[in-house]
Image 1 (cartoon, rainbow, N blue to C red):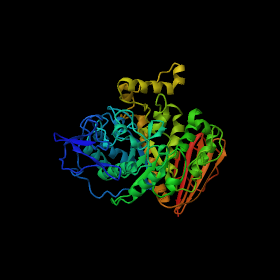
Image 2 (image 1 turned 180 degrees about the vertical axis):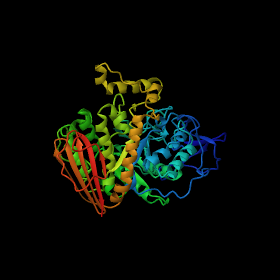
Image 3 (image 1 turned 90 degrees about the vertical axis):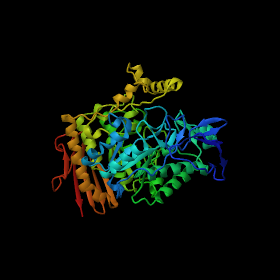
Image 4 (image 1 turned 135 degrees about the vertical axis):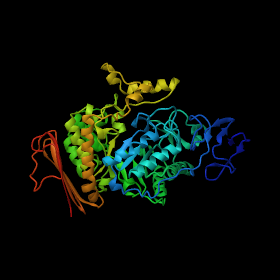
Length: 546
């Protein structure tokens, strides 16, 4: 193996004892380079910047030409209110620079953090980002590395932390030349649902990903990372890798707290219990809300469709719903006891890119359920003590879809189209077509609508009220430890929940489909939406600091 820089003669690389191929030489920033294997040129798998697409040469860049605003100290995790966004559809322009222009508005509403869907370079110009092949390089369709730094800098100047979603469990189907350059990087005996499994038993493989994580945190001044689908990081070395990654992040002294978030379907406490990982996405909460509001019972909703109010009650008391117990609709129990973990370690949502975009038509909840019901669920999300996350547009009552889109050519494009059609063959049988993921119109339909309207203004007012309440009444509670929590059903479709913290208590009474027999309280609620005594969807919240 050798490396070719500019017009110079290729420089031979030597394999070191650490598993990496190495050479030392002098090069200039801005020079283009490629790896040469068996006389074929490939991009650097750790490229920070590509000359053009994922198939061409890489370009040398440094981290010395951006002037950061001083004194960013980050936030403690209990103050996180996450706003998940996709750069390409968040604004009409779909760029880092355009996204930066919206940060002040999000901050004024009361959000404290953004979570950016993956931006590592993938094949083509449009996609969700989960099929990246150059995990160190920002996608050029969104802008330059300095454009990304400008977005982060702008967000932080307005008090917003920045979390980046990164994918370490697989590579995309086009342009992942590590398969050729270093086939040992992969485990030939195992596959993920999206491609070849990575072999984490090798120290060099683990270090590749740790270096990637630290690069994003240090060079782009991020406040943390969200690790996609860690349940697919499996096999020998996988557990060691996740601990090593967490330790490497904890060892950084960057003047701000760094937070790691995981998506983990296993509902296990191990990563959060270690103290190295702040939180895990909690789909259980979403599923209980969704089945209650829509009546859907297909696919992964099966076990949540039997008694969604009881499930929601359990989620409010404990965090996760499925914790190893036998449940109707489950082939085998899932999860372990997590009820003792901090409330902040559960990231709750009623919509995410997954839960919206993985529907055939990409419908949002507002198109599937009554508006007052969705508003009540939204208020519950933002007043419960668990870490809340909303999906872009939710704050303004968006009804535009978020559909699956990609940008491939030839046979691969046909495979993606066919796969999407087969996944939703049931709706095709009913005469409903699945949007073509390769058609650019699918991305255009998925762009967020920022236009003003009475409906959007109403949602924005509600969002501002809820986040002001959260800042004043819930942040002080979740800054201390939870001492006790309890929730119970008060009637068929109503419940009450009570959390006791060292700093005080929080009580929520909720109607979620029917007027409940709630006990009378000594004082008026600190926040209320609709009327508990009359409306089938309503919520009232009391908080007290001791």
